[in-house]
Image (cartoon, rainbow, N blue to C red; front, top):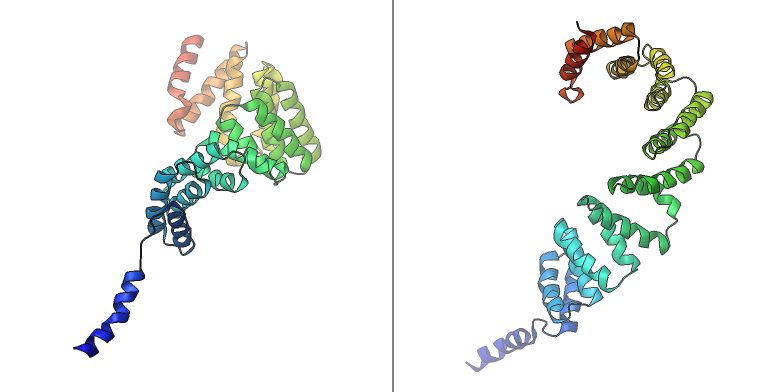
Length: 282
């Protein structure tokens, strides 16, 4: 019996020394250790207890948020990361974590706030011009988006898409003349491509200069084989606004042809055709 007792003694000693963390510091340390090991549910078990003890602790909140993020539980991740951010503002590491989570959740406001910290604590803002344009459009702030689009184009004036984005934003903020000028610059620099002609035509139409719009759209139709129906629709829209009965009748016939091509219902051709038919007394 004595021999058995001595054999069991080391086991009993080992078990007696294995203790779960109880103090705040122990819980945070255990949570961080579990996080590093990739044991995210275990990390959360410890860190939730730590946050209950000290709701404002930066590391406990950060690692708790990150442990949710690592398992794609994004709502909870953002909740704890934002708590950390509110209590510890301008923290670069916290905001680097918030940004992708907010983008995934389509929380554009928090994504913008995170980018503001990221760019003010080290990253060059030029790196994020494209994202800043999109995010400001998402939060319905086209003026700020336009400012960033101008800066984005200045970085690379060989990128056609940057011209198109800036022109569209210029039109949105009631600077249609600048949008027209930008498309003219594209035409002179890159050639008479249909996308420039169509956009410039649409901008002229928005200025009610239907004659110039018509001319540009007619030129674009044979060139724009990929988007021919939508270009013809734009032409019909322009012709329908002109005073000439003949041009209104041409618009009516284009609409009818497009009806036969079964364009998506979003274009509402049935009501357009009916209205124009009544106007022409057909």
